[in-house]
Image (cartoon, rainbow, N blue to C red; front, side):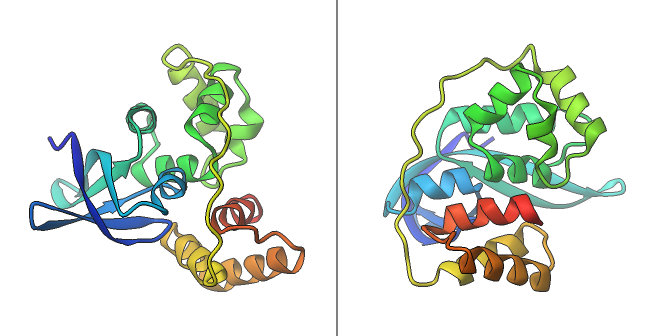
Length: 198
């Protein structure tokens, strides 16, 4: 098992990045939470989690996920232990809210917040709370690190939403609406607001 990787970021976007270490480039799927923390960095250390994809009885492939801190990786691991929650849904949760917010929602049995995440229905929200409420603590909320605004805001946001599984026309329409209403301080805010509407 690869516990962490340290190296140079050669490419990054809101859903994945390339980390070069020892002459090898690793493709790491990331959450929006991790992207916010590494987007201004040229080098970093990411804690990792290897997910094996199956098709029937056969192994269909591998996905390596990268996390800025161990708290996020541990929560990802806990979410995967819940029946019916896969890697894509766990990453969607970590892209919609910070780990502390998710832990707090689980610990306080806030089903409304958990159900507000795409792919999480009432039954899944109840199951997440039931199976994890004794395994998470109620952390203090930290201040969000501001992100750097760039001129490809909408394109990055659209690319991220499509990579997260949304239809491009619907995502594009939602982003246009948000930007027209003035919600475009940074790509993270734009994506988070879009996730609430899609």
